[in-house]
Image 1 (cartoon, rainbow, N blue to C red):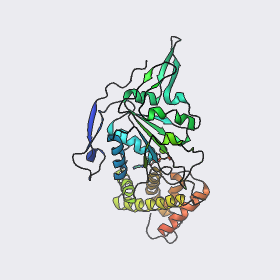
Image 2: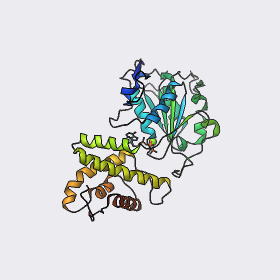
Image 3: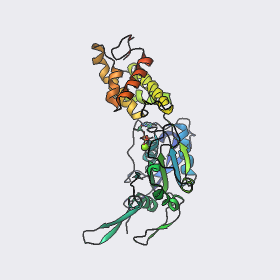
Image 4: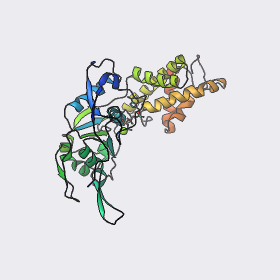
Length: 332
Ligand SMILES: Nc1ncnc2c1ncn2[C@@H]1O[C@H](COP(=O)(O)OP(=O)(O)OP(=O)(O)O)[C@@H](O)[C@H]1O
Ligand SMILES: [Mg+2]
């Protein structure tokens, strides 16, 4: 049988305030995680910001003894990264099922694989592994999963035992096994094609949480920190961060309102790239009477021409200068 690969699952308490950088958290609040050094723990993103409300929701889920959490939000709002960064901070391994309409049982639960000696050996899939270890599984883009496959998880999502048909082994999920499903909501203006409506029985097994983009001041702060770390002067960093975040939020609102040209919202990662490229391109382009903000946008992320034009217009309106710095007033 498959012996767990991770050596020791030693518990460790993590103080909320310092671990998640939430100064307003109670001084004595702490959360149970595992000692560092286990395989399968997501990599930490040094620029990741934990937003207080989301952190509270995650904490309640984690300490409340719940098994399954469904996280919904717009595309690129920060669903997957929240789950990953939470596990990175608590040093808890997180297996992932990248769901697609073709995802099959064996990619979720495991399968028999041939050995060198010509026999067959059972290999755990992410769900089975997490049940043995008492670790977590991320079911990413859950509502793309074919509903029948999602229903196969019903027993497990409640912490019940099940039998591996191929081996007859009965798996009982460890008490600390947790499931995280992320998805774009099906009823938002941002509904993405190809999403399935979860069957009610399956959906009923999840604690629910909505995730939104960072608040402007937090996103600005993140970008300023990153630009300054890269050697950009603080006043320039603040100016670029303020503009890019403001425009990104206009794009996000337009997307939600169903603006036809806006195919997708800008993620925090895309805004960060845009800000960095703006800082890099602006000095050289300024000599040529060209706008670094406009120029960097098309390099920061791939988008259809119609969307690029629409966002470019947002920039011009917000900054008061166009691609050729007409009506420029000393901006980047
Ligand atoms: N709170 C945050 N702090 C720092 N970066 C963030 C934050 N939230 C999101 N990001 C960044 O924005 C990008 C998009 O986030 P993520 O992949 O989590 O979005 P998603 O909601 O899962 O998107 P999709 O719907 O496309 O799966 C990532 O690179 C992520 O690191
Ligand atoms: Mg995601």
